[in-house]
Image (cartoon, rainbow, N blue to C red; front, side, top):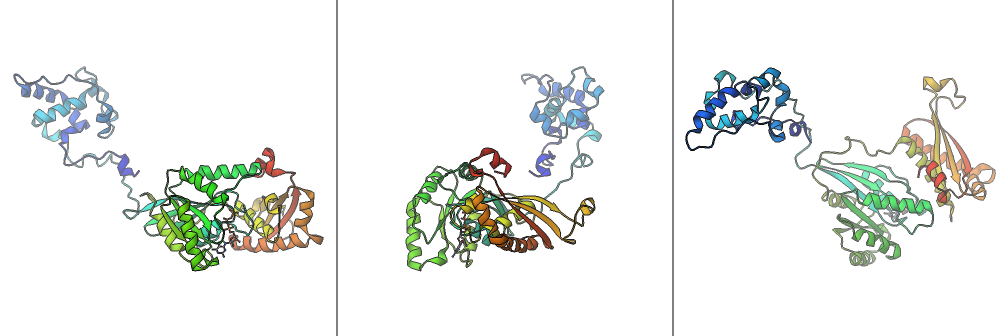
Length: 424
Ligand SMILES: Nc1nc2c(ncn2[C@@H]2O[C@H](COP(=O)(O)OP(=O)(O)OP(=O)(O)O)[C@@H](O)[C@H]2O)c(=O)[nH]1
């Protein structure tokens, strides 16, 4: 809503006396006389004074506030001026003194400034969420569309554990992509919470992009999600991801299979890795957005807090090369960021020069997993640290000292208390 929408503006085309201006009001008694004369025989008598309705009060500047208290009681009726004047305008407006008649511009001094946002007409903005089973390529596609890394990715399923927003800014539209955790049959409380998060997100966006990999047969996991989407009253675009991994014939077969899976607004094959058709998908999704001014400031590509992104970069580095259950058991918490350049902490920080000191805890579910993450003589953890540090330095644009600790939080994926401590 613009200021203009909120501020009632006088309509220069309308009869000035239609408005309850203070100037007009001071002549209510004259107008009433005029009404009595103009009514004549056989014509309905003028309406008796009454308090103005809400609609009438809202039709001009705050009429009651502007009225002088004594003017209100001048003829003992305690109100009803707005309507008296209105009737007068219909039948005998000329009886008002010329000097006091409303003139366009009379309200200039009380009018709020009109702020017209610099948004082209027809601008569209809104939210699209990417859903699909784990490992379908949602985060990679989000990054490719935004043109910058906003979500971590890995070859391990269920890498994404919270909604990650990436913003695409175009001249005539702004698309906010919401990368969601992979939907799956949950085996833990964490899995259930992640599914619930996706379901809730589905109801809050303007359009849904359902990601199905080109190189995997449509299975129960996809059908499970398709069923959920069928009940959604929102356009759903089916996206066949990883198109670069299959031949043209196999891609055509997958497109047909996806078509048979549900009722889609569109079906778009893409390869995030090669950048194929990413612009087409962007256009299709933007076509489903409502007219709206931009929702995010120009240039902002994500609203992920820096601390969260740092933790995610450490988790991404730690996921590399680990197998079996370990990726699911891994959680990362950024405990502390200490800046030696900050006067408040400068005295307490030892070593590491002027580098930003980042302290991070990696949680696993069992002590045996701790040994795997640390590796022989700490070799693996060192590798994780080097890889994560590079990403963090790139993100922050400054040198970083990264301090990693591995801890055990027994069966945290199924423990409500541990889950909330870890931010789920
Ligand atoms: N060849 C190819 N591989 C891709 C493409 N998109 C994603 N991948 C790979 O597929 C794997 C899973 O990708 P992600 O983007 O992490 O998948 P996701 O759907 O976000 O996974 P979850 O976080 O488990 O929900 C990674 O190894 C990616 O490199 C693509 O267009 N082509």
